[in-house]
Length: 162
Image (tube, rainbow, N blue to C red; front, side):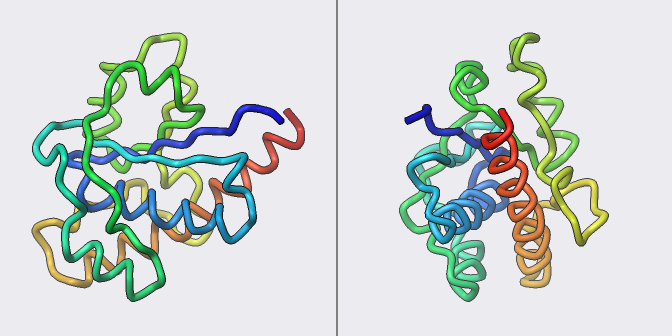
């Protein structure tokens, strides 16, 4: 069997957006029966919350849609992630810039925005819901579900044709 395809979701603190994307993508992969061939993780560009679980609001909103984020713990993005992960998906411009500074030039093709895979939404970034209300967490879930469906399709296609 080929080595699993590794996808990394990245935001600032790894407690809201990237754990949500991690949980959504992981469930899509499981539901498709592809857990042996596609693996997902998440990280933050900053060390603010290393070792902490996802934000309780992210967990609550995700749980309402059937996603369990409770086992995740925040960690910081490191340069070696660009060697391990085939696709590193950032949530916004600031985190793309921070990730790009860590990314070896030979691995830059692996760094993309999660919203590049959206098919229903035109948003260029997944906005940070941390300081907002519940509507922000719902919008993040809408964007992430859309984009993760696109990511799964792209990964499956790439593995079949690659």
